[in-house]
Length: 174
Image (cartoon, rainbow, N blue to C red):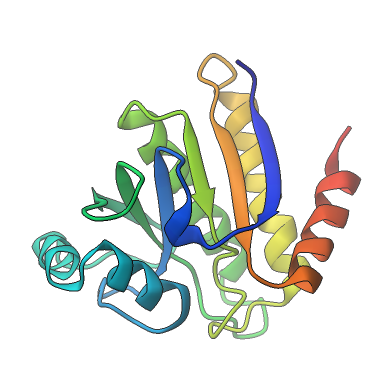
């Protein structure tokens, strides 16, 4: 098995990979957008109780819970940065939350994960920059852990967002 990265039109709550990643807030509360959809599909009360037990997560990091009613095994809650112009550590924090997510995939014996594009929604991270950081972070982890293959899918629900990601993925090969 080798490492792969793909971008698919996909509702992340339907992903059948070992793990899915929630674009979480630092309090690990049910939110809107992707986060809200994941909480509703997993079972709001059970997932919120599991998140409450963790107690929160720093920006640039991630935590893991069971997936409850979802078809995957685990939900990784990755806290990306809010965009404030890029001079406040946002690229490093975004890179870090992907790295920590990949570490949690490996630590929990999983070989496949589905990510949303973290921080590019209501957190305002510029689309191309968000894709560049995401793909670089995942690829760096895969190369550093070549002995442990992890297949990565990015779930998108907008053709334009997906096409930007595919272009950056294609440009980054080599």
